[in-house]
Length: 223
View 1 (cartoon, rainbow, N blue to C red):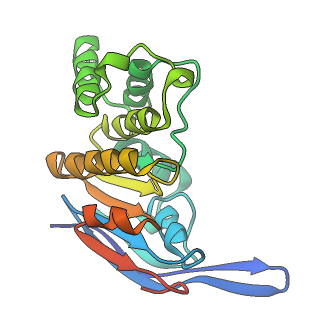
View 2 (view 1 turned 90 degrees about the horizontal axis):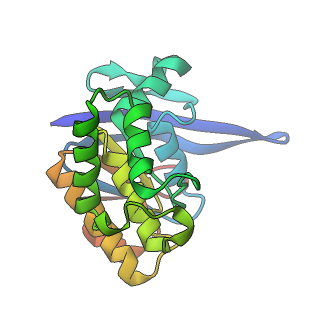
């Protein structure tokens, strides 16, 4: 089932006296339960497309639909609510809150997303996700004591704990070695399948493409 569609997406920026086209009429449909990988050289437009899809910056032209709603015409307040409730994000850096332990990082996301749960249900959900990413034994640890791979595991758990419909991952393995990269991508793929999530991932790492159901190559702002 198609859940997320982008049609005719363009992005133009003013660079001094020159107008640059970063995206040139890109159309893409994302499907539930699939990992779609965007790849291409630096400057090809893949990260720009991801951030527009996620509602983090506007397109110059084009339409975005998610679950029958037109995302591209939403107000900033509506976009914030949509991102909090239905989207999950994983970036190159884990961006963990330094003064919260691992379990509290996840509990905070449940609160931010507006997920209504009793405390015991919340605690069970946190425990479930920590088990899924192999971090139960580190639930009381703080970010400063975690390795890079452990931080990304926590970031992934945090990104999906509120059961989002779409997961956006921008170079999620860029700062990891090959072993940790494969662990992280296995997690993303498994969580996509088990949770019926629609995942859009940007990567320049050719080895990580084997985890994708579909590979979309971008060049000079087009697919």
